[in-house]
Image 1 (cartoon, helix red, strand yellow):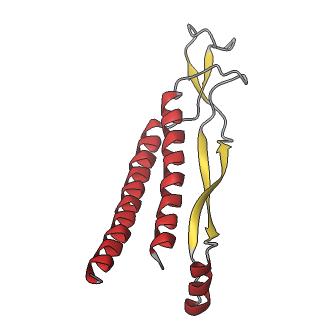
Image 2 (spheres, rainbow, N blue to C red; image 1 turned 60 degrees about the vertical axis):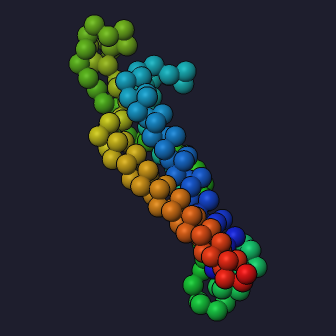
Image 3 (cartoon, rainbow, N blue to C red; image 1 turned 180 degrees about the vertical axis):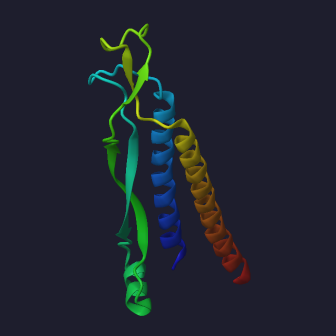
Length: 145
């Protein structure tokens, strides 16, 4: 894999994880939002990642030699959680139904924090990968002096 292919792969993963972290932040910020412009409580959002082939010539050449396919990460879709809202008893809440229950967002704060930690670690790993590729390129240039 050449420098630019590895940098493109790492940058695609960085972009995807940044999108994921933004969605997690939005989920956490709206964990108690019971009224949205669409009506009803906030619905948790999540990113769908896919691996797509690297489209440069070097990547195609490596595919032919190694029998493995080089991939990069893309966010193909942002989906809303289809689970029902969590019903919480609070008759004094302005959005309470006649029985006193409020439809709360289906956001689990502990799960979102665990996802944030995972996304942060993946992001850091891809930064390290990009830095390693850059350092190898610099060392290669230094050898040729």
